[in-house]
Structure formats: structure tokens, C-alpha cells
Amino acid sequence: MTRVFGHTFPQGEAYTIPEIPLWVTRLGAVARRIGWEPLFVDFSRFTGPRAQVSVASIVDGVMNGDPRVVCLSPFTANYELAMEVTDRIKTIAPETVVIVGGAHASELPDDALRDGFDLVSVGRGEGPLAHVLGCLGENKVEIPGSPGLRTAMGRQEEDLRQFEHWWSVDSDYSVIPAEYPMHYARIYANLGCPYKCSFCADTLWIGMKPYQRELGQFRRELSEIKDRFSPSVLFIGDEVFTMDDRYCREVVAILGEAGIPWFCQTRANLLARRGDPELLSLMAAAGCLLINIGAESTDAAVLANLRKNVTFEQLVSACERAKEASLSVLTYWMVGGPGESQATARATLGALLDLFDRGLTDLADYFICTPYPGTSIFRDPETFGVTIEPKPWHLWREDIPSVMSTQYLTPEEIYSLWLEGLRGLASAMTACSTPRAS
Ligand code: B12
Ligand code: SF4
Image (cartoon, rainbow, N blue to C red; front, side, top):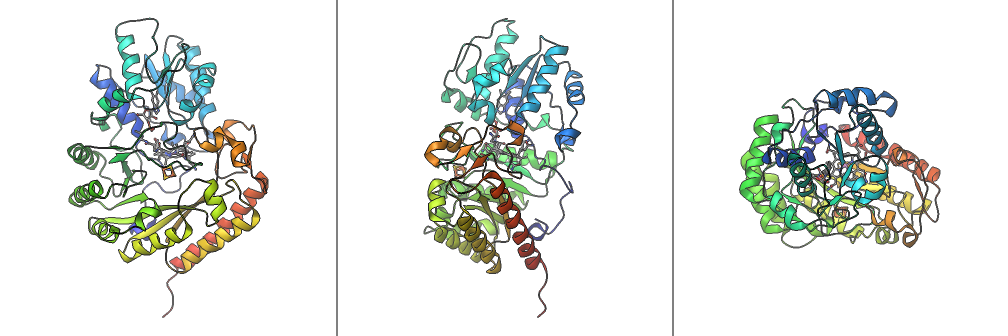
């Protein structure tokens, strides 16, 4: 990152990348709109191995605010931690209402109800939270079901009209302390993705079409982020930034006005199409330094299992286009997906290292394919020819022996291949960073 952005990032070594939690800014805006006071309790300093995380300190921090409602948004890997926190809160103050939402709980809401959470928000949380806070404001003891909310009453589908209503409300960044630690600030112009990669939990669990931010609103949010956090870099979080050429150009113009370097992500098939060289040049002129592109594998059969709908040839052509526009390139890769074997993993690694040699990728993100709840692989492992082991949720990580075995590889073999890949990447990146004697 230092090589691309030309400066070191303030956080230094970190277990996870601290970022403004956008769900808090969305739900904070909802709460304030209907007369509640949102309080964000910042536990960013608790990121680290589980043994270093104190549930008692987390709960003390929460209960100091004397909350009536506590909102939690665990990923799969920290779901059990959220359960422990909830258990302790309910022991100390049983009347506190604990709501859980986000990727993991949305996929497994009935489990979440059994696991001690009072309510589960499925999918987008703005409507369900407004409903709950409204009921509590009217002192209703029972909270009746509503679209997107799971109570003991059972599942109801999310109501997209509710989402569309709340989508037009600006996020509330004042909930987050201005000094919140971050490497970059993420902002969305277009939220959602129409593709259905089998390893991705980004949108399947939300089941939503992409929504574009109204441009005036995007400009306001950008200026709010700039004034409040003074970020040195922006990450335009859109799953597929260049999906809609016309809209993308308008967003690029706004980013150019903001004058902060930025990066974004997109799909190779879109960069390989006609017309985009001009868009890429506009992006570079507007401060885009880096474009992230999903590659995952170079093997056609593995790519087909990943439902990626992108070929390796398209990836190479996309990297070339980005380079012609003077952009740096980060490519995303994974090992241990459905159909992976020693041969396909090594061939992918070889092709990736070759891209480094040819100067077509500057950075690589390389992890173990993990079938998180919300992915198609999780929902239907048999179709993908994989076996998912019943491991505790905190072991569902991308940097330890996989929870999944493929037809050809055990979890340990996948882990060894990943370590082998990391060693290769470390030397490729060091070689790229070392100035060559002329
Ligand atoms: C930003 C992001 C991060 C940031 C987190 C910033 C933060 N603190 O929020 C960082 C970079 C730190 C991160 C890290 C990881 N991430 Co991440 N991340 C995302 C990403 C790209 C965007 C999330 C986002 O901000 N969306 C925009 C906001 C507005 O939407 P939202 O968060 O979904 O919230 C809405 C609803 O979900 C709901 N909601 C959410 N929580 C709650 C809570 C309540 C009470 C209610 C009512 C509603 C509600 O309402 C919100 C408003 O509509 C998603 C993919 C995606 N597109 O969703 C992956 C995603 C959430 N991450 C994922 C994963 C796996 C990880 C990592 C494990 C990856 C890794 N290799 O280490 C780590 C885990 C970090 C940890 N400490 O445990 C998975 C989660 C899958 C799962 N089942 O767990 C996702 C879905 C991507 C994927 N791989 O498919 N991530
Ligand atoms: S990996 Fe990217 S392109 Fe594929 S479904 Fe997820 S967000 Fe969309």
C-alpha cells in the first residue's frame, strides 16, 4: 500500500483493518430520525486474538451508556463473541433489548434467536430498526413482527420499499468519533451487485439489486467524511464500481472535485469491454490511484465452480487496460475453492507471480476460500462437490486450515498451499519493491 499511495498508514500493524462501521452510520441516522439517541461504543482497540478480548470490558463499555437497546453486527468469525456479550448483558440488565443483524445472523436467523439474541434483523436493517424503536417508544411490551425482522414469530421477507425510503436518508457520521482510527474511509455510491459468485456473501444474503446513491447525497456524504475524518485515502466501496458507465463518470467527477486520492474495485469483464479506456483515464485524472480486480483463480473449471463468469484472458486484458491508464492494480485471489487441486492451486500461483513479473499487478490479496453463511457454497455444498466441517464459528477464517475440503484437497493441504503461495508472493512483492540497478 505504501508503494501505491506514497505514504505509510497511521494504524501501523493491526489484526484487522479498522474502518468506519457504515452500518452504524446508517442505523444511527434512523435512530436519530425517530427521536432516539444513538451511542457508538468503540471497541476497535479490542481487535486481536480472542484471548486478548475481554467480554467484561466490552460489556462495561456498553452498559456505561445505560442503553435500552443494544445493536450488534457480528461477522461469522466473531458471532460467538457477540453471543457471550449478549449473555452477559442479559444477565446484568435483562430488560435491555439486544438486536443482532448483518451477514451471519441474516443467513441463520432462527439459530440467532436460539442463541440468546432478542431480535434478529434480516437483510437491510433500517426498516426493522425503525419498527423496533417505534414499538419501544410507544412502550409496547411485545414487538410484533415486521418485514425484515425475525422475532419468535417467524420469518418475514424484507420489504424493499422500506429500504428505498431509508436509502434516501443521509448516513449519520456524527455517531463515530472524529479521531476513529482508519487507513482509509470507505464510501458507497452504488451499493449491491447483480453477480452471484458462489463464494461471496456480499449480496446474496441481502438479495438486493444495486442501488445508486443520488449524486447530491453522495456529494454531501463525501464532504461530511472529508470534514469530520480528514481521510488521506478514500475507498469507493461499490462492489462493482464501473458497472454503470454513465453514473460512474458522474461519481468520478465528484471525486475529482474532492481532491482526495482514492481506490475502487470492479470486475475484469467490465474493463475488458469497449469504451472503458476513456473511463479509466478519467478515473486516474480524478485521483484514482489503484483499482482492485477479482481474479480468484486461473483455472477454468475452478472459475466455473466459483460462478465467477470471468476468464483469465479477461483478467489479463483488464490489468493491461488499467496499467495503460497509469493505475496501480490489486488483484484478489483465493486457494481451496470447489474443484481446487494441487495442480490448479500451483498453476494459479504461477500465473499470479507471472503477472507481478510483467508488471500487470502491483498488489495481491490471497486468502483461503471460506464458505461463509450467505454464500451459495454454504447453502449447497454438495452441488459444489465440497465438504464443510462442523467447526465452531470462530474457526471460520481465511488464514487458518480451511473449514472446507474439496474433492482433491484436505483442509490442511489447502492451508499448506496457502502458506506456499504467501512465500511466493512475499518474494515477488519484495522483488518489485527493490529498485533495479540500471
Ligand atoms: C466493510 C467490510 C469490512 C470492514 C468492516 C468495517 C466495519 N467495521 O463495518 C473490514 C475491512 C474491517 C472487514 C473485515 C472482514 N470482513 Co468484511 N466486509 C465489508 C463489506 C465489504 C461491506 C460492509 C458494509 O459496510 N456495507 C455497507 C453497510 C451500510 O451495510 P451492512 O454492513 O451490511 O449493514 C446493513 C445490514 O447488514 C444491516 N445490519 C448490519 N448489522 C446490523 C445490526 C443490527 C442490530 C441491525 C438492526 C441491522 C444490521 O443493516 C445495515 C444497514 O442496512 C462486506 C460486504 C458487503 N458488501 O456487505 C464484507 C463482509 C461483511 N465481510 C466479510 C468477512 C468475511 C470479513 C472478514 C472475516 C474477512 C477476513 N478475511 O478477515 C473480516 C472480519 C473482521 C472481523 N473483525 O471480524 C463477509 C462476511 C461473511 C460472514 N458471514 O461473516 C462479507 C459479507 C464479505 C464476504 N466475504 O462475502 N469487512
Ligand atoms: S465477488 Fe464481487 S462480483 Fe462476485 S458477487 Fe461478490 S461482489 Fe459481486
